[in-house]
Image (cartoon, rainbow, N blue to C red; front, side):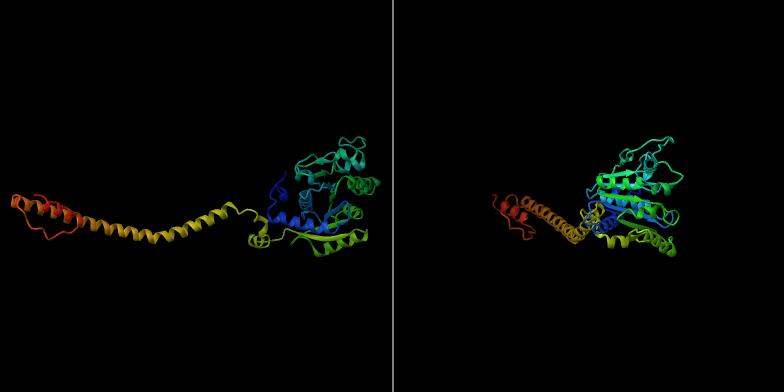
Length: 320
């Protein structure tokens, strides 16, 4: 399966959300119909109609509806490449009743249908490239195929050939419920778009809208417009950023307290060292007094810098 099938591989992306919006709009156009048949075509080649068709079909399949995409571009087919399936047998084989070896063989449409990796999504590939695609689409077989597909599937999407280059899509447009034109920004000409619309209308086709492809949109605009696409669960990066910010704020709050504690401990050590020195000095003076007085009662030493020194002095005064 190609990476271009974004709706399946990255369903929470802004692009996938666009296809879901397109799916919703098309659904509301056919609220009461049992089966919805849609043709996607373009004015000329390389406007992205096959990519749009594949992703739109995937969006429909993700709703639980049974969907089939028909590769009706029998000149330059791409759907079998996008979904990584065999090209034959396919639509041309079914319509012409000729197998891939060039021999006469009658096909049921079910012989040509292939299941894709996307749940609920099936593909009818183009089959062998025939010399007369337009003539094949004018036969009664295409109408029979439409009826059979409508009976077995809830959504049928046709990926048609460019309608200004050949008449294939114009023929199909008269058989489907809706036709959508895929155009490319800075590529499709306005006159070509008008001519395509004219051709579809002239055969009785129902043109319901235009998909503008390859629009230049910045990542910021995507994020602003489709912010809800990824809000079901915060990303790991967001969590890390939030945790880092909270930890930084916590450290900044603790830092002054630690500095104060550090200074306090330093001052306490200086005081304790001073007391220890005074106590040692006091003890030395007491011992010298005892030695000098030979056990006689002596006056209390006046310089007593600490409670410890007081206890020592009191115990000596009581000793006799």
